[in-house]
Structures are given as structure tokens and as C-alpha cells.
Image 1 (cartoon, helix red, strand yellow):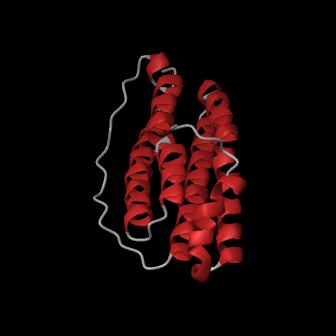
Image 2 (cartoon, helix red, strand yellow; image 1 turned 90 degrees about the vertical axis):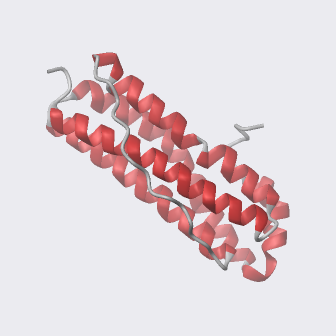
Length: 171
């Protein structure tokens, strides 16, 4: 077997988690844009972070499974009905989700390495290196939202392009 069963299972779980992140982040940006009228923040997060996850799932599937003639199984994703009352809370939630996903990617790397799936391990390291840019961005957003505070969320929304380091993928 070119890719061990434990590595395959870990990859499938990570792919499923990509779609969970997309759904949860889509819900968050809907709240930012509608409830808080933070259209700049919602748009940047939506197009450059939420939409990153389905594309990442495709890359994981293509690089780590399909090239070895292993088809991707897509697990179920939960609904997203959450609501939030504070923008500071939302930005920190995004930061936590992005960092937790980074940990999940590192865990898959470790499983691949431990199962001698070096081909998958090296591809996952490359994807992880790219993903780290999202981590850098959300840490900066969390620092900035703490600086602005809940009383100045409109200023945060107005200024976000000045501390947006990912570029604008979706425009």
C-alpha cells in the first residue's frame, strides 16, 4: 500500500474538517456582515480565510490521496446556527479555529511520518508552510481587535485593509 491506512484515515478526517471550518467561518462572516455591518472585515475573512478551506481540501485530496489512486471520502459536516454578541469574541474565535486547524495539520504530518508515508509527509509540510500565513493573519487580527476594543469596531472595520497581510484572493 502506497499510503498506510492510519494516514489515509487522518487525511480523510482533515479533509472533512476543512468543510467544517468553511461552514463555521461562513456563518461567522454572515454575522459580521449583517449583524455588525462590518462589510470590509466580513468580505476579507470570507474570501481569503473561509474560502481557503475548500481549496485546501482539494489540494490535500489531490496531493496526498488521489495521486496514489485513493479516492476521497467526504464525511458529514454539522449545521451552523451559532450567534455571537461581540466582535472581539468573534475574532478570537476565528483565531482559535485557525490555530486548532494548524494543530490538526501537524498531527496528520506526525501520523504520516510515523507510518513511513514520507511522500504524504513532505506534501503536508508544504501545505502547512502555506497555511501558516493564515495563522499569522489571525494572530494579527486578534491583536488589533484587542487594541481597538468593542467600542471601536467600526474603526477596526474601516482600517482592516491596513493590517490585512494575506492579500485579496476573492476579488
